[in-house]
Amino acid sequence: MIIKLIGSICLVSGTAFIGFFLDRLEVYRMMDLQAIKKALIFLRGEIDYMITPLPLAMEQVSSLIDPRIGEIFAHTGESMKNKIGCSAKKLWEDAIEFNINNTYLTKSDKNILLSLGDALGYLDKEMQKNNIELILLYLGDEMKKLEIHHQKNGRLYKSLGILGGLLIAILLY
Amino acid sequence: MDITIVFKIAAVGILVSVLNQVLTRSGREEQAMLTTLAGLIVVLFWIIQHISDLFKTVQTLFQL
Image 1 (cartoon, rainbow over the protein chains, first blue to last red):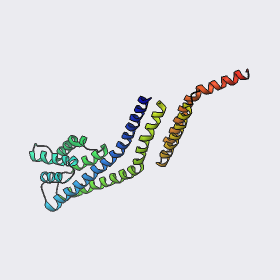
Image 2 (cartoon, helix red, strand yellow):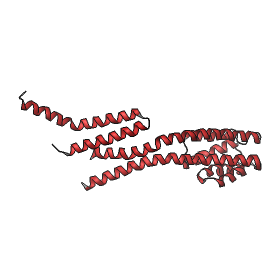
Image 3 (tube, rainbow over the protein chains, first blue to last red):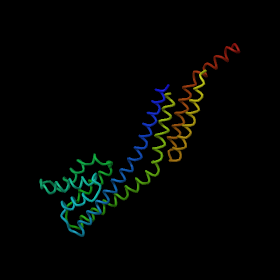
Image 4 (cartoon, rainbow over the protein chains, first blue to last red):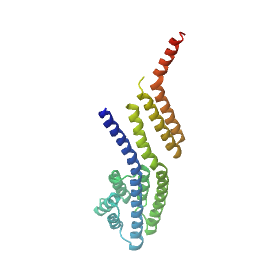
């Protein structure tokens, strides 16, 4: 009897944890997207006002934002400084591939980030600025969508976690 | 008959109705209906033996 009770408690707490985790996952993704947005605004500032070279700008931006996302920028800056003979796009893609697993970003976020690489270091200052503006626009849309999704489903995940656990516990009791 | 089955059915009923409400409020009517259906099937599985026993009892009682 007591073993059954302990098992049920473990089951309910497990499913409740999954529910809360799914809810938090979206919050963490939102935080990562905000960090990218912040980084791109800093990068735009560095390019526009300071006219900093891209490798240095990347490294400076990386020190100002959340280390999880900052790592992508730091990795790109470092690779650019090493001058290994690859294009900026390739270095940016490599940095994303290498660090994306440490973040909470999804495949669509990754594609948005990859599209930044298309015009990275291409033509003049204006081109860089416009490219960053475009990515900021995409990010804004994605964040808006995520906000609506989270408002709609955040509480649902938590309730489903607890209630689903209780239901399974009763069915197996 | 074991009385615990009555309490189990009651608990499933309460939980399924709450789940139904939660899913309906978040605009997932299809899943809400599926949950209700799943609850109904599970409860039917539990009581099918008892219903069969009831029919047999009625048959023997009235010698049909």
